[in-house]
Length: 94
Image 1: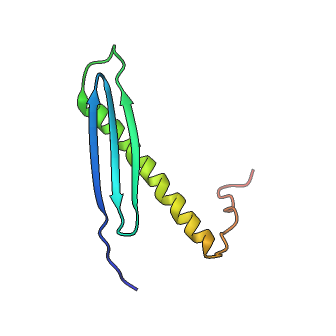
Image 2 (image 1 turned 120 degrees about the horizontal axis):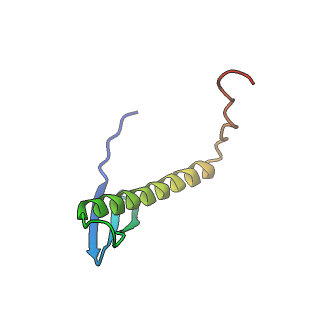
Image 3 (image 1 turned 180 degrees about the vertical axis):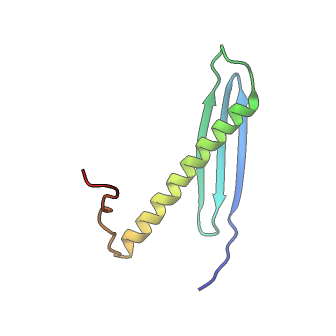
């Protein structure tokens, strides 16, 4: 079974007074989700906007990723699929 999808994603960055905020919006075709993230510059640190952009965007993408995983886990639970138990320990016995 092969299938291909394209999910449209937009990342918005806003900077004001040492705080960068990011909003990432993904449209899956059946749902639209929004992730948010922020980064604040310590006043003692040099002003390097790229760092704030990277941190805020990364945090927004992490937020979006958590939402996607939560939705997938709810979908799996809704199908009545049995989840595997805890993984066995690996390595040398103690």
